[in-house]
Amino acid sequence: MSTLLVIGGTGFFGKSILDSFKRGGLEKWGIERVIAMSRNAESLLKEAPQLISSKVELYSADITTTTTLPFADIVIHAAASTDAARYLSRPLEEQQNIQAGTYNYCSLAKKYHAKSKILYVSSGAVYGRQPANLTHIPEDYIANDLSELPDGKRDYAFAKRDAEEAVKSLGQEGLSVSIARCFAFAGPWLPRNQHFAIGNFIEDGLHGRPITVKATNMVYRSYMYADDLVEWLMTIALHANLACPVYNVGSDETIMIGDLARLTAGEFGVNASVPDITESSIDRYIPSINKARNALGLTLQHDLIAGIRHTIHDIHATKRRLDA
Image 1 (spheres, rainbow, N blue to C red):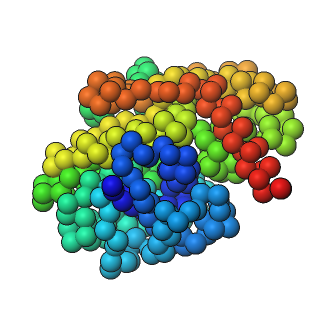
Image 2: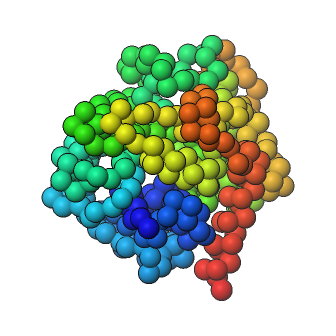
Protein backbone atom coordinates (compact mmCIF):
# COMPACT_ATOMS: atom_id res chain seq x y z
CA MET A 1 0.00 0.00 0.00
CA SER A 2 1.23 3.48 -0.84
CA THR A 3 1.21 7.07 0.37
CA LEU A 4 0.46 10.03 -1.89
CA LEU A 5 1.78 13.51 -1.11
CA VAL A 6 -0.06 16.40 -2.77
CA ILE A 7 1.88 19.65 -2.59
CA GLY A 8 -0.76 22.32 -3.05
CA GLY A 9 -3.28 20.12 -1.33
CA THR A 10 -5.85 22.84 -0.61
CA GLY A 11 -6.30 24.04 -4.21
CA PHE A 12 -8.58 22.75 -6.96
CA PHE A 13 -6.23 19.88 -7.82
CA GLY A 14 -5.68 18.93 -4.19
CA LYS A 15 -9.38 18.97 -3.30
CA SER A 16 -10.26 17.02 -6.45
CA ILE A 17 -7.70 14.34 -5.52
CA LEU A 18 -8.99 14.17 -1.93
CA ASP A 19 -12.56 13.94 -3.22
CA SER A 20 -11.64 11.00 -5.44
CA PHE A 21 -9.75 9.37 -2.57
CA LYS A 22 -12.78 9.72 -0.28
CA ARG A 23 -14.90 7.85 -2.84
CA GLY A 24 -12.37 5.06 -3.35
CA GLY A 25 -11.07 6.44 -6.63
CA LEU A 26 -7.41 5.87 -5.71
CA GLU A 27 -7.78 2.27 -4.59
CA LYS A 28 -6.64 0.90 -7.95
CA TRP A 29 -3.22 2.46 -7.29
CA GLY A 30 -3.03 1.11 -3.76
CA ILE A 31 -3.20 4.53 -2.12
CA GLU A 32 -4.10 4.08 1.53
CA ARG A 33 -2.98 7.49 2.80
CA VAL A 34 -2.91 11.01 1.37
CA ILE A 35 -0.83 13.87 2.76
CA ALA A 36 -2.30 17.25 1.81
CA MET A 37 0.43 19.87 2.07
CA SER A 38 0.03 23.63 1.77
CA ARG A 39 0.88 26.80 3.66
CA ASN A 40 -2.29 26.38 5.71
CA ALA A 41 -3.43 22.81 5.26
CA GLU A 42 -5.79 23.10 8.23
CA SER A 43 -7.97 25.41 6.14
CA LEU A 44 -9.46 22.23 4.67
CA LEU A 45 -11.12 21.54 8.02
CA LYS A 46 -13.28 24.62 7.39
CA GLU A 47 -13.44 24.72 3.60
CA ALA A 48 -14.03 21.04 2.89
CA PRO A 49 -14.38 19.00 6.10
CA GLN A 50 -16.12 16.21 4.19
CA LEU A 51 -12.82 15.43 2.46
CA ILE A 52 -10.96 14.80 5.71
CA SER A 53 -10.67 11.38 7.34
CA SER A 54 -8.21 9.41 9.46
CA LYS A 55 -6.47 8.46 6.21
CA VAL A 56 -5.77 12.11 5.31
CA GLU A 57 -2.88 13.94 6.94
CA LEU A 58 -2.81 17.73 6.88
CA TYR A 59 0.74 19.02 6.61
CA SER A 60 1.26 22.77 6.83
CA ALA A 61 4.47 24.01 5.25
CA ASP A 62 5.50 26.56 2.63
CA ILE A 63 7.12 24.72 -0.27
CA THR A 64 9.19 27.82 -1.09
CA THR A 65 10.99 27.78 2.28
CA THR A 66 10.49 24.45 4.05
CA THR A 67 13.59 22.44 4.86
CA THR A 68 11.87 19.07 5.30
CA LEU A 69 9.24 17.01 3.51
CA PRO A 70 7.29 13.90 4.49
CA PHE A 71 8.12 10.70 2.66
CA ALA A 72 5.64 9.50 0.06
CA ASP A 73 5.67 6.83 -2.60
CA ILE A 74 4.00 9.18 -5.08
CA VAL A 75 4.31 12.96 -5.13
CA ILE A 76 2.12 15.40 -7.07
CA HIS A 77 3.52 18.93 -7.01
CA ALA A 78 0.58 21.20 -7.79
CA ALA A 79 1.47 24.24 -5.69
CA ALA A 80 0.87 27.50 -7.56
CA SER A 81 -1.74 30.22 -7.54
CA THR A 82 -4.08 30.07 -10.54
CA ASP A 83 -5.82 33.36 -9.75
CA ALA A 84 -5.21 35.58 -12.78
CA ALA A 85 -5.86 38.71 -10.72
CA ARG A 86 -2.81 37.97 -8.59
CA TYR A 87 -0.61 37.67 -11.66
CA LEU A 88 -1.90 41.01 -12.90
CA SER A 89 -1.48 42.83 -9.59
CA ARG A 90 1.89 41.33 -8.56
CA PRO A 91 3.29 39.37 -11.51
CA LEU A 92 6.91 39.24 -10.41
CA GLU A 93 6.01 38.01 -6.93
CA GLU A 94 3.80 35.22 -8.27
CA GLN A 95 6.39 34.22 -10.85
CA GLN A 96 9.05 34.04 -8.17
CA ASN A 97 6.77 31.99 -5.90
CA ILE A 98 6.37 29.31 -8.57
CA GLN A 99 10.09 29.26 -9.26
CA ALA A 100 11.08 29.24 -5.59
CA GLY A 101 8.61 26.47 -4.80
CA THR A 102 9.97 24.34 -7.62
CA TYR A 103 13.65 25.01 -6.95
CA ASN A 104 13.26 24.28 -3.24
CA TYR A 105 11.29 21.12 -3.94
CA CYS A 106 13.89 19.88 -6.43
CA SER A 107 16.60 20.40 -3.83
CA LEU A 108 14.64 18.54 -1.13
CA ALA A 109 13.46 15.76 -3.45
CA LYS A 110 16.99 14.39 -3.73
CA LYS A 111 16.92 13.70 0.01
CA TYR A 112 13.29 12.85 0.72
CA HIS A 113 11.89 11.51 -2.57
CA ALA A 114 14.85 9.86 -4.28
CA LYS A 115 12.85 6.62 -4.67
CA SER A 116 9.43 8.22 -5.21
CA LYS A 117 7.39 8.71 -8.36
CA ILE A 118 7.16 12.48 -8.89
CA LEU A 119 4.69 14.41 -11.04
CA TYR A 120 5.02 18.14 -11.62
CA VAL A 121 1.81 19.95 -12.60
CA SER A 122 2.65 22.43 -15.34
CA SER A 123 0.38 24.27 -17.76
CA GLY A 124 -0.54 24.51 -21.41
CA ALA A 125 0.48 28.15 -21.03
CA VAL A 126 4.09 27.09 -21.64
CA TYR A 127 3.27 26.79 -25.36
CA GLY A 128 2.62 30.51 -25.64
CA ARG A 129 -0.25 31.72 -27.80
CA GLN A 130 -1.79 28.83 -29.72
CA PRO A 131 -1.75 29.55 -33.49
CA ALA A 132 -5.23 30.22 -34.84
CA ASN A 133 -4.86 27.48 -37.46
CA LEU A 134 -3.66 24.81 -35.00
CA THR A 135 -6.81 23.21 -33.61
CA HIS A 136 -5.09 21.02 -31.01
CA ILE A 137 -1.62 21.74 -29.65
CA PRO A 138 0.73 18.72 -29.21
CA GLU A 139 3.51 18.23 -26.69
CA ASP A 140 6.21 18.58 -29.35
CA TYR A 141 4.98 21.97 -30.51
CA ILE A 142 7.83 24.48 -30.50
CA ALA A 143 6.55 27.22 -28.21
CA ASN A 144 6.04 30.76 -29.38
CA ASP A 145 7.65 33.76 -27.77
CA LEU A 146 5.87 34.21 -24.45
CA SER A 147 5.88 37.96 -24.95
CA GLU A 148 2.79 37.46 -27.14
CA LEU A 149 0.77 36.37 -24.11
CA PRO A 150 -1.35 38.92 -22.22
CA ASP A 151 -0.18 40.49 -18.97
CA GLY A 152 -0.40 38.09 -16.05
CA LYS A 153 -0.48 34.91 -18.11
CA ARG A 154 2.95 35.73 -19.55
CA ASP A 155 4.62 35.70 -16.13
CA TYR A 156 2.81 32.52 -15.16
CA ALA A 157 3.87 30.80 -18.39
CA PHE A 158 7.49 31.88 -17.99
CA ALA A 159 7.60 30.54 -14.43
CA LYS A 160 6.05 27.21 -15.45
CA ARG A 161 8.44 26.83 -18.37
CA ASP A 162 11.38 27.51 -16.07
CA ALA A 163 10.01 25.10 -13.46
CA GLU A 164 9.74 22.33 -16.04
CA GLU A 165 13.45 22.59 -16.76
CA ALA A 166 14.24 22.29 -13.05
CA VAL A 167 12.09 19.16 -12.78
CA LYS A 168 13.65 17.60 -15.87
CA SER A 169 17.06 18.05 -14.26
CA LEU A 170 15.94 15.73 -11.44
CA GLY A 171 15.59 12.96 -13.99
CA GLN A 172 19.15 13.58 -15.12
CA GLU A 173 20.18 13.08 -11.49
CA GLY A 174 18.46 9.71 -11.23
CA LEU A 175 14.96 10.55 -9.92
CA SER A 176 11.72 9.35 -11.50
CA VAL A 177 9.84 12.43 -12.71
CA SER A 178 7.06 13.36 -15.10
CA ILE A 179 5.22 16.51 -16.18
CA ALA A 180 1.52 17.13 -16.80
CA ARG A 181 0.74 20.21 -18.92
CA CYS A 182 -2.76 20.98 -17.76
CA PHE A 183 -5.40 22.98 -19.64
CA ALA A 184 -8.96 23.75 -18.47
CA PHE A 185 -11.24 21.80 -16.15
CA ALA A 186 -14.69 21.50 -14.60
CA GLY A 187 -15.55 20.13 -11.20
CA PRO A 188 -17.18 21.01 -7.90
CA TRP A 189 -13.94 22.39 -6.41
CA LEU A 190 -13.15 24.75 -9.28
CA PRO A 191 -13.24 28.38 -8.06
CA ARG A 192 -16.41 30.13 -9.18
CA ASN A 193 -15.27 33.70 -8.52
CA GLN A 194 -12.06 33.96 -10.53
CA HIS A 195 -11.17 33.97 -14.24
CA PHE A 196 -12.44 30.47 -15.05
CA ALA A 197 -15.31 30.94 -17.50
CA ILE A 198 -17.07 27.69 -16.73
CA GLY A 199 -16.82 28.33 -12.98
CA ASN A 200 -18.29 31.80 -13.35
CA PHE A 201 -21.08 30.53 -15.61
CA ILE A 202 -22.03 27.86 -13.07
CA GLU A 203 -21.97 30.41 -10.23
CA ASP A 204 -24.35 32.67 -12.16
CA GLY A 205 -26.63 29.74 -12.88
CA LEU A 206 -26.67 28.65 -9.24
CA HIS A 207 -27.96 32.12 -8.32
CA GLY A 208 -30.48 32.27 -11.14
CA ARG A 209 -28.60 35.03 -12.95
CA PRO A 210 -28.30 35.35 -16.72
CA ILE A 211 -25.01 33.97 -18.04
CA THR A 212 -23.17 36.68 -19.91
CA VAL A 213 -20.32 36.49 -22.42
CA LYS A 214 -18.33 39.63 -23.18
CA ALA A 215 -15.91 38.37 -25.84
CA THR A 216 -16.76 39.43 -29.39
CA ASN A 217 -14.07 37.32 -31.03
CA MET A 218 -13.88 33.57 -31.56
CA VAL A 219 -12.83 31.96 -28.27
CA TYR A 220 -12.41 28.18 -28.21
CA ARG A 221 -11.94 26.14 -25.05
CA SER A 222 -12.29 22.57 -23.79
CA TYR A 223 -12.93 21.19 -20.32
CA MET A 224 -11.88 17.96 -18.60
CA TYR A 225 -13.96 16.81 -15.64
CA ALA A 226 -12.18 16.56 -12.28
CA ASP A 227 -12.45 12.77 -11.93
CA ASP A 228 -10.78 12.32 -15.31
CA LEU A 229 -8.12 14.81 -14.23
CA VAL A 230 -7.29 12.74 -11.14
CA GLU A 231 -7.17 9.53 -13.18
CA TRP A 232 -4.76 11.10 -15.64
CA LEU A 233 -2.53 12.68 -13.00
CA MET A 234 -2.16 9.42 -11.12
CA THR A 235 -1.41 7.46 -14.27
CA ILE A 236 1.19 9.96 -15.47
CA ALA A 237 2.75 10.03 -12.00
CA LEU A 238 3.17 6.27 -11.97
CA HIS A 239 4.85 6.42 -15.39
CA ALA A 240 7.48 8.85 -14.12
CA ASN A 241 11.02 7.89 -15.06
CA LEU A 242 14.49 9.30 -15.64
CA ALA A 243 13.47 10.64 -19.08
CA CYS A 244 10.76 12.85 -17.52
CA PRO A 245 7.88 12.21 -19.96
CA VAL A 246 5.57 15.16 -20.66
CA TYR A 247 1.86 14.80 -21.35
CA ASN A 248 -0.94 17.22 -22.08
CA VAL A 249 -3.87 16.85 -19.68
CA GLY A 250 -7.27 18.14 -20.72
CA SER A 251 -10.12 17.51 -23.10
CA ASP A 252 -9.93 17.78 -26.88
CA GLU A 253 -13.70 18.38 -27.12
CA THR A 254 -13.74 21.93 -28.46
CA ILE A 255 -16.52 24.42 -27.75
CA MET A 256 -16.91 28.12 -28.45
CA ILE A 257 -17.33 30.15 -25.29
CA GLY A 258 -20.74 31.44 -26.39
CA ASP A 259 -21.97 27.88 -26.89
CA LEU A 260 -20.62 26.97 -23.46
CA ALA A 261 -22.67 29.81 -21.97
CA ARG A 262 -25.81 28.61 -23.74
CA LEU A 263 -25.20 25.01 -22.71
CA THR A 264 -24.68 25.93 -19.06
CA ALA A 265 -27.64 28.31 -19.06
CA GLY A 266 -29.82 25.49 -20.38
CA GLU A 267 -28.91 23.32 -17.39
CA PHE A 268 -30.18 26.03 -15.03
CA GLY A 269 -33.07 27.35 -17.10
CA VAL A 270 -31.64 30.87 -17.20
CA ASN A 271 -30.94 33.18 -20.10
CA ALA A 272 -27.60 33.42 -21.89
CA SER A 273 -26.43 36.77 -23.25
CA VAL A 274 -23.93 36.17 -26.06
CA PRO A 275 -22.79 39.03 -28.33
CA ASP A 276 -22.38 38.66 -32.06
CA ILE A 277 -18.89 37.85 -33.31
CA THR A 278 -17.52 41.13 -34.64
CA GLU A 279 -13.77 40.50 -34.42
CA SER A 280 -11.84 38.11 -36.65
CA SER A 281 -9.20 37.10 -34.09
CA ILE A 282 -9.20 33.53 -32.78
CA ASP A 283 -8.33 32.68 -29.17
CA ARG A 284 -7.74 28.95 -28.95
CA TYR A 285 -6.54 26.92 -25.95
CA ILE A 286 -7.07 23.25 -26.81
CA PRO A 287 -4.68 20.35 -26.22
CA SER A 288 -3.93 17.36 -28.36
CA ILE A 289 -4.20 14.37 -26.04
CA ASN A 290 -3.17 11.71 -28.54
CA LYS A 291 0.12 11.07 -26.75
CA ALA A 292 -1.61 10.19 -23.46
CA ARG A 293 -4.17 8.09 -25.32
CA ASN A 294 -1.63 6.15 -27.33
CA ALA A 295 1.19 5.81 -24.79
CA LEU A 296 -0.81 5.38 -21.59
CA GLY A 297 -4.22 4.22 -22.80
CA LEU A 298 -5.94 7.16 -21.11
CA THR A 299 -9.45 8.14 -22.14
CA LEU A 300 -12.09 10.70 -21.24
CA GLN A 301 -14.84 9.09 -19.19
CA HIS A 302 -16.95 12.27 -19.02
CA ASP A 303 -17.93 14.49 -21.92
CA LEU A 304 -18.57 18.19 -21.40
CA ILE A 305 -22.26 17.98 -20.60
CA ALA A 306 -21.67 15.11 -18.15
CA GLY A 307 -18.92 17.14 -16.48
CA ILE A 308 -21.20 20.15 -16.07
CA ARG A 309 -24.04 18.04 -14.68
CA HIS A 310 -21.79 16.20 -12.23
CA THR A 311 -20.34 19.52 -11.10
CA ILE A 312 -23.78 21.02 -10.47
CA HIS A 313 -25.00 17.88 -8.69
CA ASP A 314 -21.98 17.76 -6.38
CA ILE A 315 -22.23 21.47 -5.52
CA HIS A 316 -25.88 21.01 -4.57
CA ALA A 317 -25.07 17.87 -2.57
CA THR A 318 -22.36 19.69 -0.62
CA LYS A 319 -24.74 22.56 0.15
CA ARG A 320 -27.38 20.15 1.41
CA ARG A 321 -24.86 18.52 3.77
CA LEU A 322 -23.76 21.91 5.10
CA ASP A 323 -27.36 23.03 5.60
CA ALA A 324 -28.38 19.82 7.33
